[in-house]
Length: 298
Image 1 (cartoon, rainbow, N blue to C red):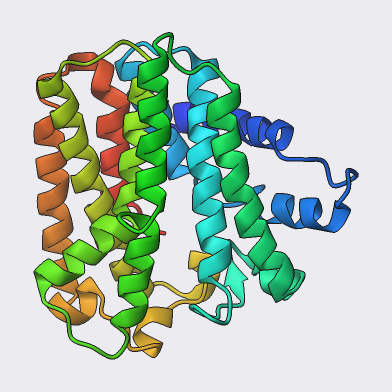
Image 2 (cartoon, rainbow, N blue to C red; image 1 turned 60 degrees about the vertical axis):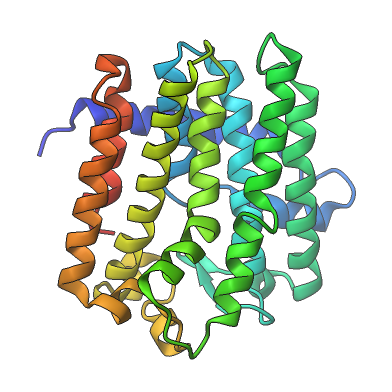
């Protein structure tokens, strides 16, 4: 099958962004060498970079300079990588495989994994403070606050806390959605909004539409993840398949069943596309990413 324009766009950004991350992360030859090696191991050469791609697509919508979006996307990706390192640790999900290779605490050790997460989070906010991402300092400060909120107790960390508290429990659909709006959706929302904030200001109405798009896409991402986790094997996923079910964690599949979960993802996909109806051709990549997130097979 010939490569589509969207696939070419995605691969070009993924390859270029890998170089951005390599340049941003401390060299493994700089002290403390082992910590820096573990940081690079945990971030580089893995994942589809969905969050950075969303940031780049939102930046295209607002005419942002790519050099600015690079930094915003890197900050989000570093937070995401830190969350994976910590989530995989024995005190949380106790997983041994991530992105097709041993998890950080397995490859190094638990203490190193803990410090990797701490260091990646600090580096993310260092980037937002070191670089000019918007000519208006007030808007840049808002970007810092946005990522901090998405990462903390009212965002990703809070969602993870709810997830841990929910083991062995039967959650209602609103409770499950609340958990994943925070655990998964908060960083996806941050990626879209940070990318957009690197460019021209959107009025409140359009910013709210973009925010709604990111929330729909964030939930759809998790619903599809749950479906894939129930159907794909470990080699395909690059992480331990069926882990949530084995740990008696509530998922959209255990709550709704596979078919109903697929329908839910399709409905979220449709709603996400509807929010972009008034944006025109500039939102093309966001639409295509919504398609990719919902229709992906692994």
